[in-house]
Amino acid sequence: MARNLEAEQVDQAPIAAGGPDLAAVPAPSPVKELTARALIAGMVIGGLLSLCNIYSGLKIGWGFNMSITAALLAFGVFRLSRALFRTSEFQILENNINQTAASSAAAISSAGLVAPIPALTMLTGHTLSWPLLALWCFSVCLVGITVAIGIRRQMILVDKLPFPGGIASAKTLEEMYAKGSEALVRVKTLVGAGIVAAVLKIAEAIFRLPKLPIPGAVAAGGGKASLYNLGFALEPSLLMIGVGGIIGFRAGASLLFGAIVGWLVIAPRAIDAGWVQTGPADGMWTSSVLQWLLWPGVAMMVTSSLTSFAFSWRSIWNGIRGGGGLKGADDGDTGEVPRRYFLGGLAVALVASMVLQATLFDIGWIVAAVGVLMTFGLAVVAGRVSGETGITPVGPMGKVTQLLFGAIAPGNPAANLMSANVTGGAASQCADLLHDLKAGHLLGATARLQAIAQVGGALAGALIGAAAYLVLIPDPKNQLLTAEWPAPAAAAWKAVAEVFMKGFEAMPAGAVAAMAIAGGLGAAMAILEKVLPGRARVWVPSPSSVGLALVVPAYYSVSMFIGGAIALALGRFVPSWSARFLVVIASGLIAGESLTGVGIALQKMLFP
Image 1 (cartoon, rainbow, N blue to C red):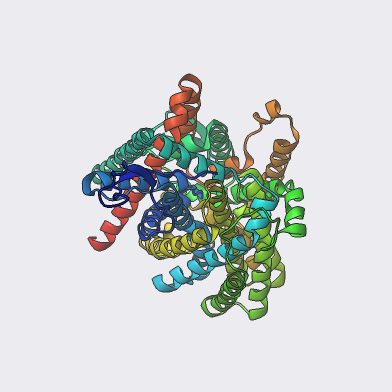
Image 2: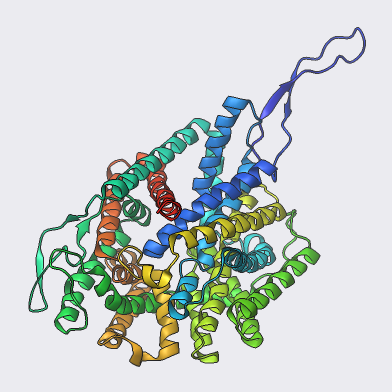
């Protein structure tokens, strides 16, 4: 694809003394790609956006791809810099380096910070200092990056997988540089939405704005429980509305359906049976109900994700059969990482992962080696599934490894969680880089320079993300699995490890039967999603969303449903405006509240 080059007018010297002056002719600017400012911008922007994914991950278990957000922010910053300080144009390939580094940094939450790391602390009390936690997260990312470098040619150039996220990033960058004024409007919209969300979050913290109860009551415990007791309220927050705007109406409606079934049907029966203790009549009972309801919710999320993953068997087989390597068709593509550097980097990443598993978590060398070898194969599979569908199966990857290590090292939660941490985190980073490399390929970028940017971004994300996690959650055992920090991803990882560690008899009363029913329903809904025709499929609730609704307070589901409904209405009535600004506004709301929430936590820590 042709690169966008800006032409500059330059003065030319005369041909000879006394000869005519040449007219000024346009000369192309030198193509810039891996510049210091592009890399630093990506590391800084990505580091800040990593806080958003950690914050939302601990709230709802989901993170978001920040490539386009980072590209818009950098575009706006350097346009402002050019206007104020007359700096040179921030070119499209520089911005591609920026978004590559930023997406790598923002994805650090998938390296364990919102799932296996807090799960291990809750189970065993094991914690890591900031330097060691950052080193661990960086090592997980490094494994995924090296695998992605090795399979780039096969998946992008030979198999020509679509990688939808990469295509979206490339098209957005092209549009930004073709229509600069439009990009600036979107940047202003993004920043404006972030400011609105930040102001509301600050007001909530200062004035302690209450949640607005939704009227109504249900029978529970021989009496009545108000909807407010069971978490049905409107919270003074825009974060979840922004999330709902991104995930769409079907997922939002599924969340609301799951909240109604879980909190208004199942929870009252658990209270009647004496399995759940109620709280004050004028308060919310979400924390106590969550401790029981998370078991069927986790079962549904696990079975549905594994069932959906199984339907990708062709991608899995293709990944195993011809997962990649550095060889491929001779299509003239340049910029690959030299083989000796790739092999050396792969050896360093895999050995470092084994050493850190052994030294930080006391995992045996054989177990660590098995985990690392599995990581390579499953990261290839995850990359192919993500390339074909746009969805990275991080959860299923981790669960597959957890199930394996539950058999290899029963009763060892560190092996169960942290070996799976390597697999899931590396799979996520591998897929993330492949989407970025797809964007770079379409834009004519150099793959090895993007790999450098990805490593730089992972380093920035690890340093900033590990610090943010420790600031937000200094006491995971008491802070998590609560109404404030439901941490559904951590709950799922902890539940699987706990079953292998203690057995089903350690579960709360009634939880095993509820898990069996919810697990069966999750698998059934996942099958229906795959086999029903398109029109019928939309009426099947999303099983992962229904399961999530059982693991987070009901007011989160209500807010995400509102966001999804707003997105549906905007898409119907103002489709052009919605296509331009919906995701931008939603991303701004998420970023604004997340960054402010981290800032408030830091302020409380420094000035208690």
